[in-house]
Image (cartoon, rainbow, N blue to C red):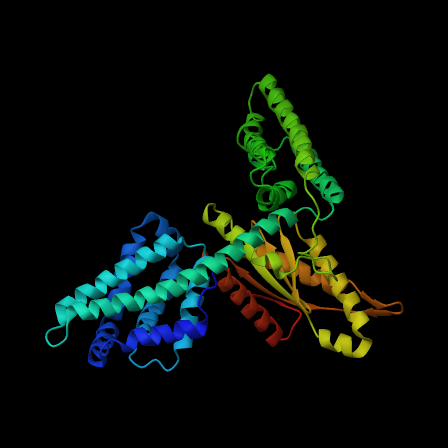
Length: 453
């Protein structure tokens, strides 16, 4: 059944408000405005006591922003004169969409609204006297908040369904763009790790200096892409177990004083690598190729799966000490390239810059073409210094490589890069905005530079 449209919801909400006497509405408005800080404080105090809710609300940045936002929402909800009920409906839809983007369970939202209503009821009963009826005021508050929850819940459901479909599509899409190439690339990465390990052992490096499989080129690809793409496949659990054993057991055993135990650990590691290669072949063999998530010109990812990738990285960061950075990259003076040399030349430059970005990143990183001459890199397992250094190297790599705009035209191209490190906020849109702001500052302050926000 088709849900009510915005006009119907606005009309229904206006009718709901107008059936309550105006003096009572005014009294509720004044009470909410006076105590909005107390109501918001009570709401978040109660919610933070819930272990599930605290996962979403414990971040310091969230708390600083949410309390004032809740106060503004309450004030707007109970204003006596709503100039635009459709705008009020849109506000609730946006809140529902944000809840879906953060993957906040709907039961927590409904629990929050119940707690909020209880706090308002208590204040009404303590304040309202004849001729103002506390009972009628409480019914009005309940109907009002329930209307907002209905709209939020529908928007949440629609956005959540869309996110689920996109995530399933990404699972099929990720890693399946050229199975043969991907298989050989990851085999090579795994064997390179093994060779690096053998060299480190021959050089008699201590156990702390031995390369971990989980943070190798293969490991980053596996944990940030393969695990998600093939979640549920029996091979994934086995590969994960082997990686954990290599890093937590067998690498440590290589420092054992007993030569027999060292050789046994080395043999276990080599067997694990062979097993991982075999299992990887099996899981990739079952994959089928899709193309809907690639930019047709550069072959980079397009925006289709951006929300899935960022939500996944936020979830991983929440449960580990690892962090990720966003790098917004923009080709300087790109319009003048198109105007001077033509759009074919511009397309050639885009493809060559995209190639540099792609080959500069690791297996666990993702590179998106955001549109036009703007790109986004999701840089995993990094920190502020590491992401700044990577961005500087990337900027220099583009600047020193002449771009073939046409058969007889070479151009020197530069890029501006805005960098931001994920700060724990559960909404990826915040990090995207920070990266955008950093890029704007890089361009405003002269271009061909890196700015970290």
